[in-house]
Amino acid sequence: MRRRPGLSVRWKLTLSYAGFLGVAGALLLGVVWVFLLRYVPDNSQGLLGVSPNRYLLVRTFAPAAAVAMVFLLVFGLAGGWLLAGRMLAPLTRITAAARTAGTGSLSHRIRVEGRQDEFRELADTFDTMLERLESHVAEQRRFAANASHELRTPLAVSQTLLDVARRDPTRDRDELLRRLQAVNTRAIGLTEALLLLSRSGRGTFTRESVDLSLVAEEAAETLLPLAEQRGITLDVTGGATRTSGSAELLLRMVTNLVQNAVVHNLPSGGTVTVRTEAQGGMSVVRVENTGHPLPPELVPTLTEPFRRGTERVRTDEHDGVGLGLAIVHSVVRAHDGTLDLVPRPAGGLLVTVRLPGHDVGDARVDA
Image 1 (spheres, rainbow, N blue to C red):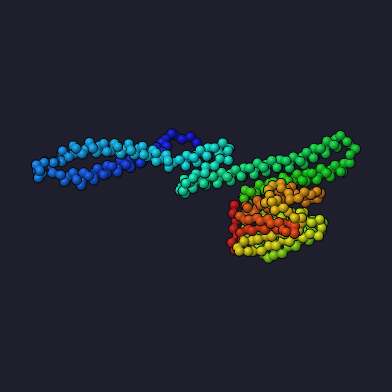
Image 2: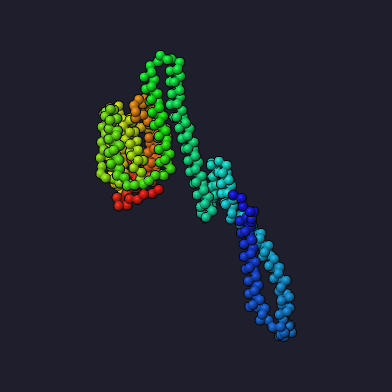
C-alpha cells in the first residue's frame, strides 16, 4: 500500500519535546511578567537614588528572555532527537526483524534486553510469533515432503505393475488386478487422511453436543472384526461423557486410537481397553493396549505425520499410512483439548485425550 511521505515518529517526538519546552518557557516568562514586572512602577525614586522603571527592566529582560527561548528550542530539538532515538531503538529493531521475516527468513530474533516495558513486551511477542511461524512452516514443509513421498510410492508401484503386464501378456490377470486394487485403495486412503488432517487443522467445522461413550462404542464395533482376527480382546467401559465438537472428526479420532491400539499390539492374546469418563469438568477418553515396549524417546514423535512406532508388514484393509496419531493430535487440538501418550512399563501405550466438558443444555452451533 502506497502512502504519501510524512514525518517520521522520531521527528514527531522531537518536535513535540521542543514544542513542550517552548511552551513551558513561554509560560515561565509570562509568570515572571505577571507577578514581577507589572508591579514595577513607571516612575519611582528608590532609597538610594536609583530610579528603576518598567521600561528599563523590559528592555533588559526582553533580550535575555529571547536568548533563553532560543536556547530552550535548540535544546529541545537536540535533546528530543536523542531521547526519541533511544526510546524508539527497540521499535527500529522490530521493524528490521519484520522486514527480514517478510523475505522468508524466520530464524531471526530480536531479543531486546532490559527491563519490561511496552516495546520490550512487543518484541518478546514478536519473537514468540516468529518462533511459532518457523516451527509451523518447518512442519508444513516436512509434511509436504513426506506426503509427496508417500503418494509417489503407490503411483510408482502401479506404474511398475502396468509395465510388467504390458511386457508379459501371459501374466495372471486376476493377480494383477488384485494388486492394483490394493495399491489404489492405499492411495485413496492416504489422500482421504491428508484431507481430513487438513480439515481438522483449520478448525472449520460445525460444533454439536457429542457423547464420547457412544463414539467409543461405535468405533469399537467397527474394529471388532479386526480385533477378533488378530486375537485381541477389545473392552469398552464408561458412562455418558459429553463434549462439544464435530461428531465425524471425534469418531475418526477414537477410531484411529482404537485401530492403532489393535494393530500395534501383541501377535495374539493382547488387550485393548477404551474408557470414557467425566473428570474435573473435562471429558476424558483413555485407550490402553498391550504390546511391545516402546523407547521413551520415540513416544513424543508418534504424533508427527508418517511416523510409525514399529515396522510391520501390512497386508489387510486396515493398513495405515502413518497419519493415525497425527490426525488424532490435530483433531484434539482443533477441539481445544490435550493429548498425552505414556508408554506402559510392561509394553504397549496409554493414550489419554482430554476435551472440554459439555452439558446437554448448553449445546450450540458455531460456524
